[in-house]
View (cartoon, rainbow, N blue to C red):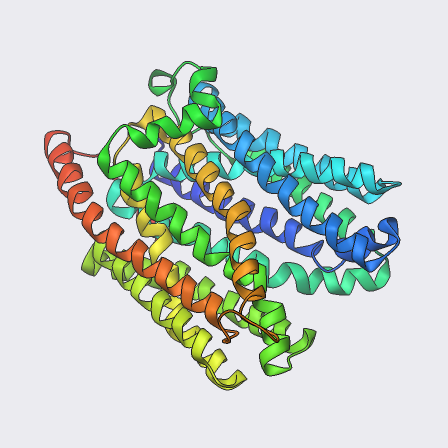
Length: 426
C-alpha cells in the first residue's frame, strides 16, 4: 500500500471523490442536449436515433480499447500524471464538442471523450493504493456515491443550461473538468511509489493482454464473470426503461426523470453511507451477496409490477444492488499486487465495456419480442425477469468464488501485516 502520510491520504481521498463528482457531472450535463444537437446535425429523428446509438457504441469501444492502456500507464508512471492528463484532455474534448460545426466533429469529440473518460481506471487503482484491503469496499462505495451524485445533478444542471443554448452545457462541462485538473495539480499527491511500479508493456496494455490477468487465478476469473454479469444486467435500464415505462404505465419525461433522480439519490446514500458499516459487520462476501439478492428481487418486481406505484416500490430492494459493486471490486484488488492495480482496473473496465455493447442489444431484442401483436412471450416485463436471472447467477458465482478469494487473501495478509491506513469514514 502507498506510504502517504495520513493527512496527505485524507486529502487524496477528498480529491478523488471531488474529481469523480466533477467528471461524472460534466458527462451528465450534456445528456439533455446531446441527442437534440445530434438531431439538428442529422436532419431527422430517424437518422438521429441511428447516430445516437452509434455514439454510444463509439464511447464504449474507446473505453474497451483505452482502459487497459491507461491502467498500464498508471502502473508505470504513477496515478497522478495519468489522472491529471485525463482531466485536462476531457476539458479540451468538451470544448471541441461545444465548437463542433458538424456531426463528424461531434463524433470525433465523442471518441476522444471515451478515451479521456478511461481515467477512472487510474482513479480506482489510486484508491487501492491508499487504502488497506479491509477498507477498500468503503472506498469504492464513496466513488460509487460520487458517480450517483454526478448523474443526479448533471442532467438537472444540463437541462437548465440547455435553456440558454444547446452549446452552453458543453462549456460548463469543460469548466468542470478544468477545475478538476487545477484542483489535482495543486492538491493530489502521487500514490504509487517508484519502487512498486511496473515497466510498460503493450502485451499487457492491449485489451486481450490486460484481461489475461483475469485468467491468472480462478478467483479472479470467477469475479470477472461476476463483474460482466453485473454490468450486463444493469444495462437493461439504458436499453428499455424509458420505452417500458411509456408503454406499460404511460409515463412521460417528467415521471421518468423524477424516478431516475430518486434512484440516484438512494444509490448515493447506499454506496456512500451504508457500504462501509455493513462490510465492517459482515465482510465483503456477505455484503456482496446481499446486494445481488436485493437486486434480483428488485428486478423481478419491476417485471411483475402491475402499475407505476409497484414499479417505484421495487426500487427499495433494488437499492441494495449498490452493495455489490464496491465489495466485488475490493475482493478483486486483493488478488493482485500493488504494481498491477492499474492493469486490473483497465481489464475490469474492458469487461464492463463488452457488457455495455452486448447487453443493450440483447435486452432490446427481448423487449421487442415481448410486446405488441404476435409477441413470442406476451409479457412486456420479460427483459426485467431476464435481468433478475442474470443477477441471481452473478450472486451464486460470486458467493462460491468469494469463499476462495477471502481465504486466499487472509493467508497472504497473515504473512505481511498491512500498513495502518486512514479511516476514510473519519
